[in-house]
Image (cartoon, rainbow, N blue to C red):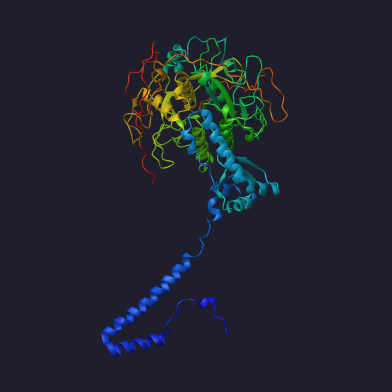
Length: 616
């Protein structure tokens, strides 16, 4: 007996002759009524057939997402013709950090975030890591975004993308930041200065100093081109310096591993600035030489640093590596497994960007890293960018993220926006988010240079405005400890007390604050602090006694960092002007001189933040 073929399994089908006979029978015997009954029978058979076919189709397993669709176009383009490039393999299983929000202290928040992220990476990355090790494929694990950086060709990218535990494969392009250029270099005391720098005075920081608060107990971190740590205005404030000896463990990290001809080399064992930009921004946040060079907002704060750019050129991996180190710093030549979240900074200065024009088309990797810092109680202060005066030019990560406290630049001494300052609204992610959040002086800013320990120079850009806000946050947290690591409440405190500046440019929003030109307005840190309680007792920050993990040369005494030749006639990428492109009207009286005493405030009452338009 023949077995019934599986291919013929299914409902019985009526032959053409059978259907013809039935039709004749029904028509002949019952006329029109019989014809209607026949049609009903045929429709019934048809319905059963369709039902069974669709049911059979729906029972088939769905095809997994095509591997090619997981690979970013940049990776496809740069692996053509057998080329090898670096790319991120981002895992589908990402950590849930929501539990950090209910924890009361930064220590608890930081440890929860660090352990949660690290454990998630260790438990999910191992199968891929083992596979890569067996084939001697170059790779590096990141836990802050649960991703693995791999170097390989198209075939490797496709093989990894085909895995069900991989969400996407994105590129690691080299990003050249058009950083502001230095102006004339002054050597102190050959060119002594008297008084406080104009930008510092215009924020009313000296009024807060007069109350006894200069940023004590707060640690500010630089993510930039490095820092000349031996500079007269920086060395006394470095967390790794105890007045006699230096220990760079937990206080310095270099994410530059493959530069060629860089004056600082690779994996520098001590803070070094290869361009000037990082020394300059750090100086504006915390710098003071104890004499006539009062260049910083919070001279009582301490600083640490991570170099994330090679003379202005970064990569997503370099940026993420520094953010990961800030989350839980570890000693020189060690790994994130030796990280200590209790040594994390409170505030980070981020005067860098990752523009799409340079190939930065990452998915959510940078945003995830920024949000991890926020969850750990670290305030990330970010430059808006120098792509103005057009609207919707706040468009490069990390400037447009909600978790970034984004800073626009004013022409110093005025309440007019600098012509180069990038403006909102944010359209890149479809949010129509209002940016910048706040503004600060950003033209002709005088601060540290990296050519010598007593050298100072001038620069203009949102890079220069950003450390004014980082320093202001340090003053706020020093004066009102209850705000420390309460990110939203602290931002509200600065926003609520800002000098509001109206602008109808770049709708939606405006003309009243917040608008897409000035955000909430110009920083006024004295108004934010008001009259706090007694000065808190301050314990000196001990220098770490940890030793590095690998071979290194100790630095018991300071050594000079790389010297960079200064151009006689520098050109500035961001040119400062005294005329704003959008029409601005100050909604509060602004003075270019510090107020003698701050106005007492009972405490900030949060103003409602604008609700972003729904994403399409």
